Image 1 (cartoon, rainbow, N blue to C red):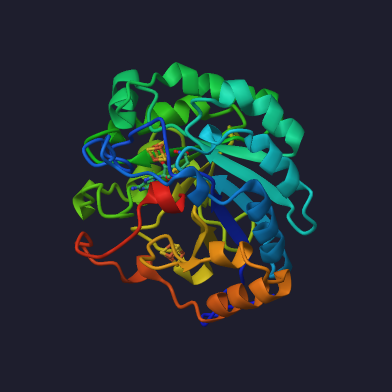
Image 2 (image 1 turned 120 degrees about the vertical axis):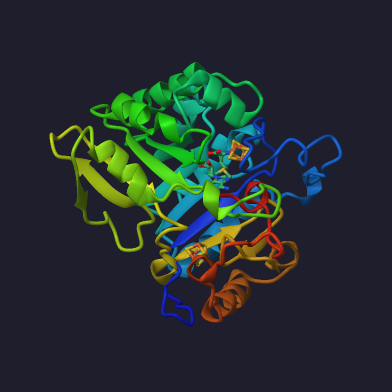
Length: 334
Ligand code: SAM
Ligand code: SF4
Ligand code: SF4
């Protein structure tokens, strides 16, 4: 097991399998930037499933036990279940999950579950159709995401987590409605503070609704109480309904950063290793996996990168972060 300069072990790995997406969420891939001129990665730049599998084994050997597949929209990657089947067979990886916008989930949930996927997180920012269509900016309806969530639950990809990014003046008036919809369903609704990932989403601190206000709004209608994290380093702060109707979570990346317990590494779709969501520089692993280097030698390199890790961006961010070079969320994977 390796630890970084702040004594944080390497426990989680997020793997982006594509930088493409069929949505244009305004906070992630604004249309004005991610348009026809935007150059997405070419197919031969993407890590192959074999290369991803090999890297995942190397990371498992270094202490990773949790793997999340993300993107872009991961379900756009063809035959993803083949990768899932391989990853689910890796010794030491006991939690295999995927984050998706849910648009293709109704069709794919069964196959993914059969391949060995444990759970899914589905992003859904509002139940108000007009609000949601405006936020995904491709006019995608709420109902089809809800179908995806139902299909995931029916396939046993449970508990389903539903992630909603909250942006002031955009969807914050629909928070309580969301909470009421998912209360008592067994799904875990989690509200994410709008973050300053990348440089294209026009982030301003004023647009962030602090998690305390989100919890307060729900608590006023359906009383909540804080509960401890499910495991050390859990990103969300958890609350349960006092009447037993389940739990919610809030991801307080801005109002209450959790860098001190951050044990996550990320691999972009083209094989760069990043040790922080807000990094501007990664290590290109592709030449390593495409050379005749042994797994042990690759593990040494990754171990050294982790050992020298000092990241704690969210703890030191300032009000204006637009001048900083940072990679985009759709590229690094959320
Ligand atoms: N396309 C998939 C999806 O939307 O679930 C997976 C990739 S997406 C980049 C992963 C997560 O990041 C989503 O839950 C999304 O809402 C969240 N996200 C994207 N941009 C964000 C931002 N600026 N602040 C907070 N969360 C963000
Ligand atoms: Fe696509 Fe997910 Fe980003 Fe929305 S949040 S644009 S669905 S990658
Ligand atoms: Fe981890 Fe970087 Fe996020 Fe802090 S800012 S929690 S170090 S990814």
